[in-house]
Length: 95
Image (cartoon, rainbow, N blue to C red; front, side):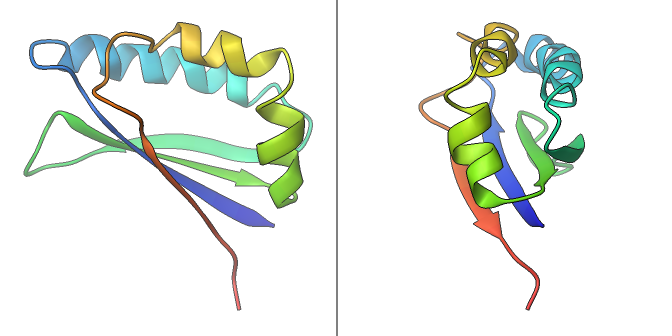
């Protein structure tokens, strides 16, 4: 199992729209058969920052199967234009 951490920063004035878009988008991510869990948390000190945490069966389940499949554009359609730049995305594994 791997954990994907993605940090999104809202466009100024779009904080609530991004929050709601991420929540709707999590339902899309959860549809992938290799997704174990998906949730979001919001930064207390910087309310425009969100951390999306997804657990996947394997790295490839996320980086290949999900990102290159039909669910990825559906997920992004909920948040496109609501965040600045590219999200920071890293993968973690227990050791």
